Amino acid sequence: MLEETLDIQTGDGAMETFICRPDRDGPFRAVFFLMDAPGIREELRDMARRLATVGYFVLLPNLYYRAGRDTLYGPDVLTAGSPDHTRMRAVRTKMTIPPVMDDVAAMLAFVDARDDVRPGQVGCHGYCMSGPYALAAAARYPDRVAAAASFYGTWLVSEAVESPHLTLGQAKGELYIACAEHDELAPLPMVDELRGLFDASGARGELEIYPGVHHGFGFPQRPVYDKLAAERHWQRLLALYRRNL
Image (tube, rainbow, N blue to C red; front, side, top):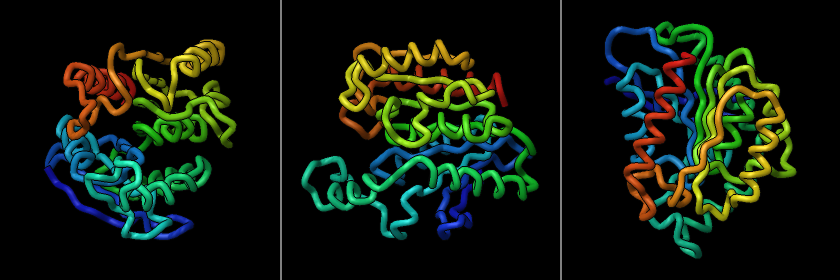
């Protein structure tokens, strides 16, 4: 495996991005792996490596780059009231969908200039806060994002500009939405509303509820990690990308 961390230039500055891909048999299809709220950490890099081992050029950008290069947090970032949690929330609460769509455009331009990336369509998936971003990317760039997935995405039905529930029908690629049964950031009534909107939109794909698990079940370092559900998420994601990329 080959890996490096590079700056991708955007209209708002340099977006530090972890890149991982196999060391032979390229070029590869590009996959955009969008981080959750606690930000870039080794846990996510390991997940990017796992995805790259099956033949993808994986980009894991620090979506907090507009707030500076010190937007990396320690293990207590999820502990309410901790210094890192306070710092992270100060950045997280300013995040909106349209600037992230500009970041996706910058990543598309970046991979288009690479000889080790196959030209054309890409995949995009996100967790937690980035679940909506991945789905929004499929709608904003329907001719480029061939597959998009949201895993325990937060507030998928909201008043946010480009909220994915408003744009599902604009996507041409296949969509996969995975929701935890127990998730205060995506409660089941919201999921039921989203399912109705999804069905009515004509979008291609699936919304699936993972029973008995909690928000964050796919992250190995979380107390709520559920191995069976996490492996199911990997199976669904890899199958999605195999079908479409």
